[in-house]
Length: 192
Image (cartoon, rainbow, N blue to C red; front, side, top):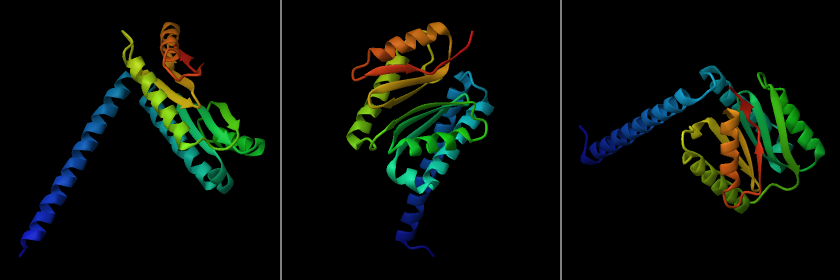
């Protein structure tokens, strides 16, 4: 039969497995709640995720780009923001063409700069700014902040989403007031 160590191991394994299930269940519930408030269709949300995955894989498969560039690909309603740093114009053009060739992409915003990849410190600062902007958006009255994607590169905040003109103005103003923000770029699509 089982000795005490084997029993303890099985109990620990069961607990870890159950905790994983709880995380998946809670994560699924949170995702479901976000989808319920999203103005995109469920199919479009899935397409956006697919675009990001395909772009990431294609860019990782290109050895030069993978080794010398820092690229973020963000898709919202089939419109793609490409941000980060490329080593030269030829690499930047290749990155944009790779993303543009992904099925279902309707438009690509090229916000790549030419230069060395940003440092971990710079990226950490950008992550902090993104978090501050999202927190500020959650504080807006009568607004669902899950409708906006926020991307920050070198202090420049890019905002994507399906918003009304009034929502766009309020979101942009809130983002501008966050410390560390150098500039706000609106990439919204508008709804009535």
